[in-house]
Length: 556
Image (cartoon, helix red, strand yellow):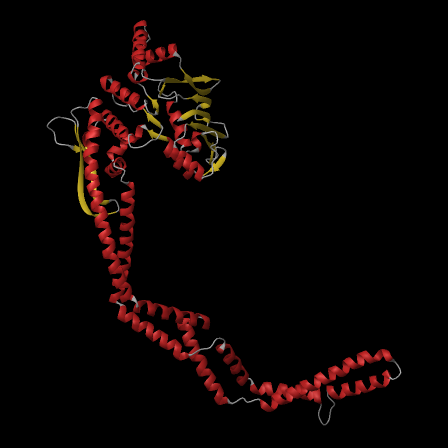
């Protein structure tokens, strides 16, 4: 249960601490006093959406802290899963909302994600807000309500698993079937491309080597002339000395000097080594000149090969590496296409198996929904009768269709509010007050199926009065026998039934608005119930009536 709630800088609330009790906790107050702020605060600590507009004007952030005690086993297990310290058997949930719109959440001091907050919040609190009645106006929600009541989530999950897998198989089969129509043409295309690349038989770097050979042949005369001149400069001619002759003379002179001066020995040896190296170079140049073969016929063959490589690269390149990569890709695709028949047969077998699962699970789901609908209809009708709607007939219309994500049927709630009138869709005939009571009946029906310890009702009595309002109050009081109920109301009949009664009031001080929450004592409760009853000033009679209502409420 929610033991207490701390609210700071939320909307017009500067700072409030609310200590809740077991049973029925009621909130009342004049219109605009800020009753919805308490609901907003509770929603925020169970993972609801928050915005920067919720932060009190001029403040940096809003802080909401809720303390939950007497934790159920599901909450304890979840806390252990996330390593939240619950040694004192309580969860302290905090939500901070900054003025720039950022929010943070903590559980027992540890940072948590909003997803975690929603997960634990769903086990702690069930909030029925003013706008939840709109659920009844959306047919898509009716199926979910029925499945929730029948505890059909596991069966639906199994059905959806096989249905989704069947959709995946059908999609792949559709692609294969489409590909089959162009299979022969594509095989021919791929075969031609593979043959063209393989017949070219291009080696990595071959184009670079051929281009080098081509340049050499085209410039053969210049190359030969340069090699000869370089050789003559090194080896000399009949008329001139070359580098070798000059170095021989230099080495001889240095050898002569070395006989008298030892320090010349080292540079002399270095020069001698250089002379040997230059002689090797001269020999290599001479060999190059003798062995060069610049056959013009060879150039034609090179140019033809380069042209062939260029065409292949332009078509499948731009580089030889790209050509080879495309060759592998073409081969892989060809192999895959050739395996289409095998894969197609595999998928057809899987399709039949999954379709059988979908039909079997779908039929089981349909059967359970029909059984659930009968029980649901009777239970909700009993609730409606208690809420002064005895003449209302509720019907669950189940319409079969082809397998879909949610099963083999659609579900819609129909009602008849007048005897003799056929049931019609809720959104066409239900008034606001009727919607509130129908939704409360459904909420009570669903509540019997879970163990959520705290139920929150935000103005569940909208659109009702008189005996119907009293019946709603009694139903809330009944729920509060086994769980904690928090309820915002504007009706005296309901307020008189409170176990704990909180008054929300608004004051203005120095141009700022402040909202306070007061836990009323006996005298305060009587005055507040009298205020709600009174159309004008509070009289002794209204005070006496309020006291009588409260005393009767304590005996319920």
